[in-house]
Image (cartoon, rainbow, N blue to C red; front, side, top):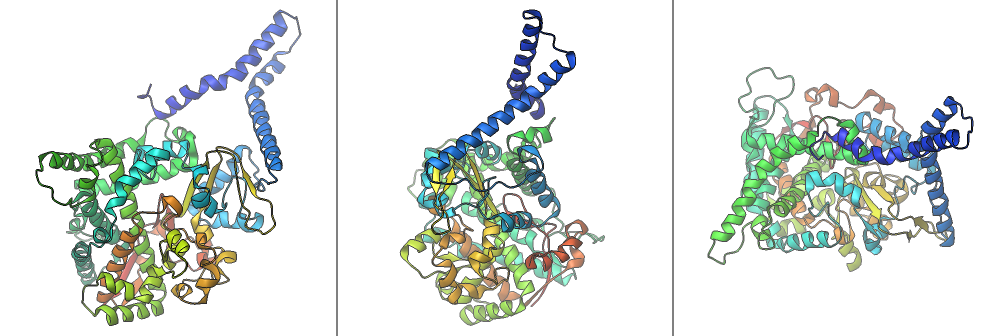
Length: 590
């Protein structure tokens, strides 16, 4: 049965259960006709059989809603208002989300709904993040459905696990993220030098550069070196040319195992994100073939030999030397190749894609705000010099760089613990993980944000999606200039007015017990590259002619009521993380 096509397996698992109501009605009709001699017309019998399942489902849903409202009333709480939907089963909402993903701007459609109805709605979005992520952490989890959707990509790793298994993975990785481990400045310097050298070479040819591609290779090489002890050296495969270039492409990426891994790794994330949106019904969209399996085979063929080599090295090693990379550290906790592979997969997603997203959108913002670029570059040159290698202490002293990428929040120790002392303007507008989700393990209450209002009742096993991107752009949380890119908001009185009293309005690295272990590694890596980048380039300009036609902002965006959407020069998209569709094509001057 597991070898059946996904759609056939889906139907085989559900048809018996779905057939029970029609079968019962059909048998009842036969009994009434034969035993009690009740004259039931054929058309009536057919209608009864056909409607039995939807009627039963409707009754079941209405009873559940009635029970939820009764339970909420008993606790002196409320259930948030429902999102109006012209179709049953929330189908309209799902179709709207699919349209937004295909054609719209991330989060804009949901933002419009929330502005009309409020930020706590049934389809259960935008509840109190403080309660879900921290103060009532044990009441919520990833949930079985999300684990099923993430498992083919991430296995049982830290991002897909709950309970004791999550604690096990967390305990395995935590010891490696120490200050000396995460400050790999020699590695960053070597890789940044390679990337910037290739950028300069391409610019000398007279072509713009896809910065997103460059930085994705840089972060992949850094992540694999940090995690596996050996960089995959994806930068050596060269940079892509613009779509219109017809000449020879001697440095165009080749179809090596590394490039195939990158392609399959990205495709697997796209498919996984689509399945999370659809839920357990995804086989209906991949009826005859599970495309994800093909991509994961490429990914596993790439990672498995490295895992095997690390286990072998442990057995052959007779010294007590310090482990050089995280994988060698992990084999002391377990030699199970599947667990090791799962953990590496989780950390690769986090270590590569999130930092690449941060740097891509930071450079995009700098291209649109030359005044910020000038101030930032002046501080870098004053602090480090035009060519000096930055140090850990340099980053502590560069106030404006922290505001662009990592503005230090000097507030109470409690808030520092929750936010790990960081507030990032680029991540506020373009959080690498724009949406997240939890499931309630038990019926629970979370407080309302409105003083004097009743708490919100959350039934057991309720899916609770929350969109970080929408929250980061809410005027009631950040002020009237919420849609403007302004690093000074983390340096002036707005910090104390908005973020200090309510730190959970800013969640680029999650919060609470599941806060990202690698956020300081990401900060150091992004800060180091940005310093090196701005030591070499004084201006950044978009190259719209190099943007593939299908990835240019749609014409209707220009008439959007949202200022940020109207001014967008690129097309943001999201799978598990945010990215620029078609790449971020730029030119720079030294």
